[in-house]
Length: 336
Image (cartoon, rainbow, N blue to C red; front, side, top):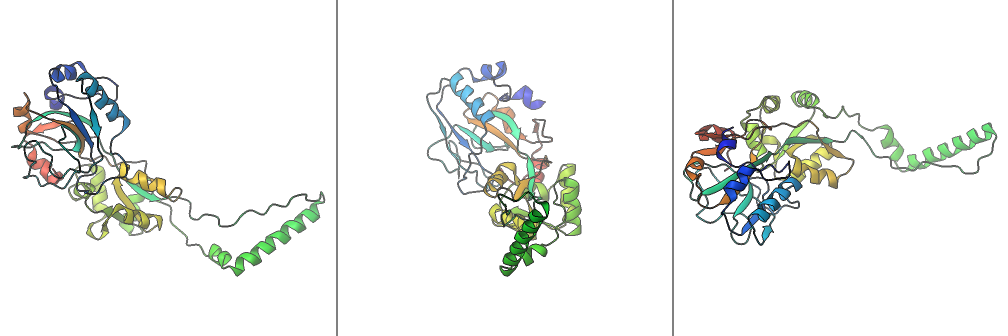
């Protein structure tokens, strides 16, 4: 509730700027650049823009209201930054963008003291945490169905021809080794398409977790704060053997049915699209995430309040800015 009293909340889902937002924005005249940021700690450029239509519409409303002549959209990734290091005045250190950025779409935590003043923070949404698992389809058919055209009306003749074609198929397929492998397909367990199945399979060691290195999910799993994440954390005592270099490597292991991949939904959607029919994303999300926000960099009448605050999410539905809770946030999230 403190966030709603002290800061501006961009109601992008309703498609308009609230009166309080317009009141606070009045008088600000500056060219703005927008950086849709990727996951904290990932330094490579991202294939997909990490900004959705709701946020884009909200930014466009701000642009029109402020009479801004141009609005730059740049795909960039936020760097790993320790809590005690802050960007220099007027810059965003490490962001892959040319020039200055007056608005950033980033995972952000505001702490004291900062090297620059923050004008407004718009808590928009929290990213959902999901896992990717193999598709229930165990195998893909590698042979075509035989069709017999112009069959005679006599039922016995039709049966004889069908049997003959099937025997020919068995003989030809056996010589290629395909029929033998078809009869000896590995018997897979049901896929972990629910959290209960997932926890059970992780505890029994029948499937392994897989995490891409340098993603903020590592922090959530190492310092669980929600019941769902605690259950997941307890199911696997030591996560370190299951952290690979990239999410792509995790996706390959998932396709091979050796693991399930944990990452943000935005990160997993690309792999599901690339490997259609082999993997899919869970419909049950673990809601324990760092927030996304818009940061406008300028001197602010609220900067004294902001200096002592940081964004600290508790649930998917609340936007909480808790003063004096830096130590608590630091335990749960090690990225700035």
